[in-house]
Image (cartoon, rainbow, N blue to C red):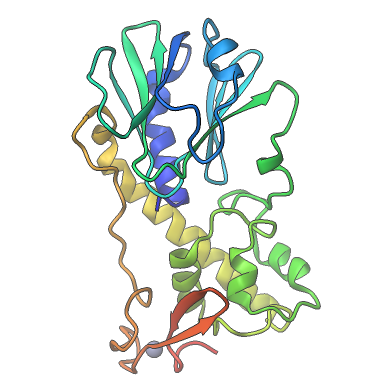
Length: 270
Ligand SMILES: [Zn+2]
């Protein structure tokens, strides 16, 4: 599943090809992906210029004059910039045709992705109530500590709550808690200021490294046969239950809290 670093790398990969381009036409090969594609996409968007390509959480926003196209890659979506006329294959659902002979193509085999519309001056309901971006100045240990005050929920759940901070999925939460030495089941309200600071730093470091690594796959955005880039990470704990901890040599343990399995080191994380 594309996580925040993949979405940010996608943004950086496609933005130079889209900025200042006018959308000439839109080709929809299905009326809906995860949700119906709103009529503004084919009725209102053509003729408009793309002024900015932004990311909020795992959504990409293409800012035009009367509103923004909201794109989500779901479980399996990817975007590519291709010459117009490139034959569409089974899972190529949406093309935005640009005024320079190129097009932005959305491919999504599982169709959990989304193409939505946010009218100028409004905030789409999917973007309302989201917490800060983890790589922004609004996100630090003091912020986490303030939000966690009095909460008994496990810190891992707290960290994956999009209302607290966006874009910290299971892999990144698991790895950041390990690096910060915090047990994933520890109640969020019972963590010291210094440990929150370490945790915020670990989240930022891991996401920034993943984005940096993604830079090497940028050429795939121009390759119709390229696989969407999911980044190889150096993982300390995620997916390593039963294996030795890379730091202390002890056996990593898996536990099930809520819907997701989590892996941690009982010696390094408290
Ligand atoms: Zn350990």
